[in-house]
Each structure stands twice: as C-alpha cells, then as structure tokens.
Length: 205
Length: 326
Image 1 (cartoon, rainbow over the protein chains, first blue to last red):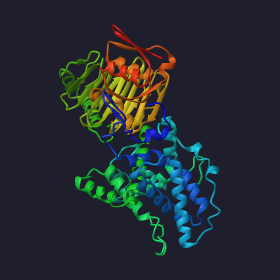
Image 2 (cartoon, chains in turn yellow, purple; image 1 turned 180 degrees about the horizontal axis):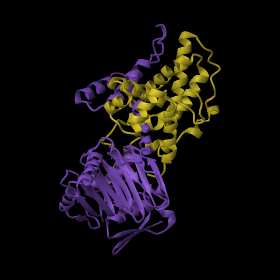
Image 3 (cartoon, chains in turn blue, cyan; image 1 turned 180 degrees about the vertical axis):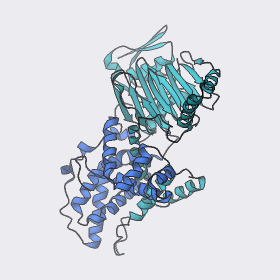
C-alpha cells in the first residue's frame, strides 16, 4: 500500500481484503499485459539496444535480426512473468544471445563487450508516464518523415497529414493503390527504425 | 531456447520478411477501407504463430500510431473536410447563394432543434442517449447542453465530467466544448472533465482533435488512444497513460473510485466530488501518505476504516465531515 518501489506497480497484487478493498484489478480491455509492457518499457530502449548491439557485433546487416530475436526472447519470458527491470533484462538477454551466437559460430570476439553502464541508458529512458510536450514528439515524427525517400515521403504525408485515402493518393500521384500501399509499408519500416532505433543525438542508422 | 548444444548453432532467425509482412498488415488494417473480419482473423493467426511475428507487429503498429502525430500539421481545414461531405456541402450552399439567395434563406429557415439540458447532482450518475446514437455518461455534479440536428452535433460541458461514446458520422463532426476548449471527433470514445479553469481530456478509442483556442492561439493537438491532455488557462500538457491508469480514471462508470498509490489528499478530493459529506485531511503530512484500492464512490465509512485499521491513522467523524489525521 505504501510506496513499495516500481516492481510492485508492474504486477497486480494478490492481496484482497473484504470491506471494499481490492488491490489492482486486472485490465479487462486492450492488449495482454506482456504486450503493453513491451511497448511501454522495452521499445523506448531500442536506441540504446541498437547501440549496444552495434558495439558488439561486426556484421551490421545482422542488427535488425538480432534486435527482433532479442525482442522475441524478452517477450517470451514476459508472458510467463514480467521482469522486474525491463532495462537489465533486455540487456542481459541481448548479451546472452550474442554469447550463444559466438559460442556456436565463433565469429566475433566477445571480450570487447561494452560495459552496460557506459551506455548511459538511464538518461534516455523515459518513465512510464513521461510527459512529453506534444510539440516535441511532433517534431521528432516530422523530422523522421523528412528522411524518407521522396515518393515514399509524399505518400506518408498525403496519408498521415492530409488524411487522404489510398485511392485519392493514387490519383494524386498517378500510381496504383497497390503501389501507394507499398510506399506506406516501406515508409513505416523506416519510421520505426528512426523513431525507436536511433539515439536522440541524431546518429545515423 | 538455450539448449541444443550438439546441434550446429541455431543461427539468428531472419526477420526481414517477417517485418515486411508485419508492416503490410499494419498498413492494410489502418489505411485500407476494405479491412474485413476475415483479414483480422488472418492477422490474429499470423501474430499468434510466432513471437517473432508478434513483436514485429507490435513495434510497427506503435510506430504507425505515433506517426499520427503529424495530423496536427493539418490545421487549415476542419476535421472531416478532406473526405467528408461537410466541405462539399458548404461549397454547394455557397454556390447556391451565388445563383439565388432564396434556397439559402429557406435552408436557414428550417427550425433548429432546441438546446437540451441534462444534469446530475452530487453523487449522481446518468446516461443520456442522443438521436444520432451517441451516448453520454454523466458523472457526479455535471451539467451539459446538447444541440444535435441535421447540420451539427454540439455539446457544451458546463460543469463536471462525462464519458462520450460518439456515433460515427464523418459528415457531421461531433464537437464538445469546455472552458472554450474544443474537442472535435468523428466517432470515438473519450472522457472530458472540467474543474474550474482546468480541462482534462482522455482518449480511449479513435481520434480526436483538441483545440486549445483562446489566448495564444496554440495549434490544435491530435490525440491518439492513451493520450490525456490537461489544459489550464496558462498551460497545455500531454501525457501518455497506461491502459490501467486510463481505465481507473473512468472507474466512476462502475460506481467506484480506484486508487493506486494515490496520496490521501487526492483520494479525499476524489471522494468529495461524489459526496456532500466531506473528507478532510487534517495536515499536509497525512495528505502525502499513499493508499491503494477500490471503493464505492459513496463508501466514506469504508475508506475511513481502511485509513484507521490499515494505515493506523486517526479518524474523527462529525456531522457532515470525516476528519483524518495522524
């Protein structure tokens, strides 16, 4: 009941008491808790995770695959039980994955693994209820869109800013609806990488 | 996952194709007009098939939702103008006005539905159903005015708090005003509260545009589900809240208040909205102690019992007020 550290907030508390008192009722609606935990706690750490992976893995083209594998493992575990600290669990999982891979394939030196503390993750980790100036987030999204390839950027702007339908965009740009959809799909993938995967300082992917 | 040491290495699973597929699903579901139940079933099955699918989908879905922020850049036109018939209608009316003033005069002469008023007393709770299918659920001590007719759908929140389930009608945006702040929606679920000059909006489903209006003429803010906005005469803050915090904030629909590490001072304030008998927290120090749990909105006695027996606080009951101190 008193402040008991963040761990308590993550898990519904079992203790129930008669007399009008029920602690932390489960959510009836929306995504499963593990999914929401992933979106809330893990995804905001992506920039740090990518930094960590790229410091410790030579083949840069493997990075997206590594990232997804780490996410899958982390969520697999979260479905059983939510980890107490998303940050340490995420990086422990990443480290174990890299060690596994190295053991099997012997492709990189593992001792080069950076110390987690040097990554200064904490400074980038937003709280679960962070207050963002709407304008700041808008600016980030806007900047990300400007980095898209021209055609792709145009479809995203027409869709997201102007709110046109796929058909209307097709007519406007003189391309098929299917092509519009392909541009949007590509745009989405790049946006996700920029919005989540890049450090605030504006590092290149 | 860690086993299999005699097998030659489980290489990294390739995620490129998975991501491609996930992105296509996100775009198809959110941007195509013809997304069907069987499409949804196919997506559900795909997501359930592998954790790699699931995380790829979650991540991209979140990114696409976040990209919706840029809708705020579209401020020159009212919501619904692009696809809706409202703009077309306006142009038609304008055109008619040029040809002959008569049709416009006739149009204007159609009697408007009168403004209806609904209110609840302290502790009250009422559901109002409007002609267009919209439902408005009024919390304690709330007053609204409603104007819904063929041309417009408008509600003024004069006092208190309400939860809106707005019937979808792109041609007629639904507008709610409080403190000269305006929320414009096409079809969605959200709550709005007015307390003095503070206006709170929390979006549960769909999309709304929040118009700060008034001084400074700030740009409107586009909300996506999970967003809450608090506007005072000076400031405008936007916060993302967890699903649990969102559902707790409208627990009044079930006749309860939910506290989760809530300072006693806040908890008392919440109770006091629902009851004419008031809870008074004697001093600041006591007000900072936190409490958790779910209570009927009128269960002051239960709350006092918990304060006494669980938190070990001193409770004094007088006519019309319950005083809690250390």
